Length: 227
Image 1 (cartoon, helix red, strand yellow):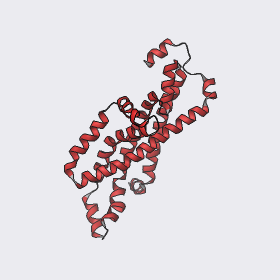
Image 2 (cartoon, one colour):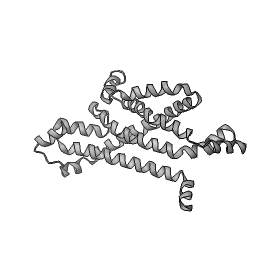
Image 3 (cartoon, one colour):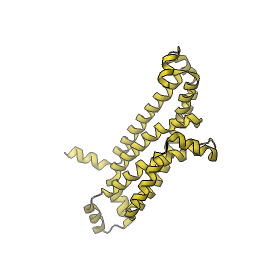
Image 4 (tube, rainbow, N blue to C red):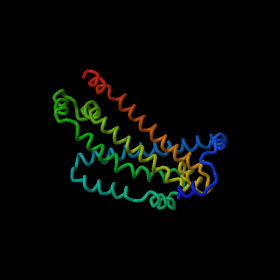
């Protein structure tokens, strides 16, 4: 559809004067996109953390939880948005609920694998030092699991940034609104801005989490330096 639009329209791909006149709108859409991504990702991390803790405490729940999160992820984004709007309206609640739901299928298994991957020797050493279960979790397990956790968050954030654009079909904010507006008006400039903005935002988020993981793992830098 977009390819046909570009082929049929006489509009240039980019109208630079439009960009200069609509900087405020582009900034507004950027803020909306970031807000939807960050809130949904934060909620997803919290809920996935609870699900991962449940799985690790009761291994028989692995199948049911995985089945439910996978089933929810299998629902097409357009269909889920459309189903939620009659109940919740067109506010932020619809995209946040939908995006949080989609994040669980990525975050939950990453969190389980991350903490399962902590060496038993490290836990035994912590117990031998007299650490409580909570102290062992925060001082030993979290630092060792952090690289894998950050990896899952990176994938989830990039996935959510792409899914936020689907909300534009329902005027729910973010770069998707620009893309939908451009399609409706046969105006390629707005489509390009929405697509490029989403890609750049995904890159920024990915690099930001790489930096966060690097900053929170000083022992990994020390290990690399020693080798």
